[in-house]
Length: 390
View 1 (cartoon, rainbow, N blue to C red):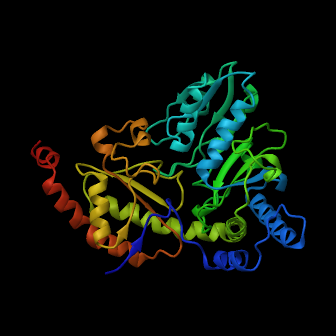
View 2: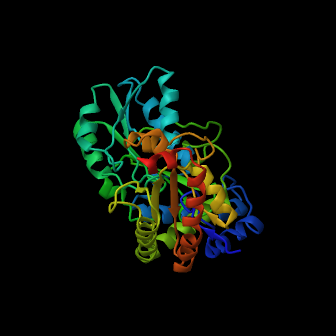
């Protein structure tokens, strides 16, 4: 049976060159980077080299990059650290209604500590209107967080325009760019944000490798105490091999970003076109043009996403329904509901995400088996026959 992986938005494979770069730091170079001896200085030097590569990928200065264990940690670090550092100024946070749970849950946690939160709505494509952000800002607002690209529907948000509003209003701006960095060009200079989260497993780096960009002069309280690592911002012995892998992945992404984008965009467009032509009652979710190049997402009416995933998996095809962090929740996506879809339709979410190793043969195989799966599942759906009779 053919096996096809279309779930790269959840995690990409570690590239062989990334693995090769990591191996010496799993076998030969094991000194603690905080140690003064030569063993420690070897690993400390490797970490700083990786920091420079990550900084170059997003056009930041090296001292503005802080390594973390995941995109979720980076988001928590930014949201909690930046707001708590400003709590004497105000206790109001603005986020979009389609943020990842690693942004929404921290702000809910902060609500229990006396902060208030405003969720800005989105349109039917999942786009945030920067003017809605402006209207949501109050004299008490200390932070605005709007993601750069949505992993569930692929929409790329107007973060530069949002950050401009924030600067005009004197408010800090953070963006969750986990699904964007390494897949599209990202520049903290162009965006004008004060903080940005990224993760290596979105662009061939190892799981457990991530970073937070903090603009010079931005106050952010540590969320992990107990050591002086990362300039005192994040305590704990460094994940040396993971950081080296992240640096190598960042270097490769910078070199091949445009080529990767062109290759996966044509595959993505082929999936969208064939889905519209070969499967009935399918809704493309997210913006039709302003979306991640490797991302195709749909709602298939009258069927639950979990049923489609299980049936695809039995045919050797891996896909997703919603984000990886909520895929087992068995409830409608808050992103799709915020975009105006009803609960029943939102339950039929399906996401295909690609890398350049995917092929047209992979897509041919998908559409060899998918229409049959949909037909079989719809025959079991209590909603489908009723709809056909109307």
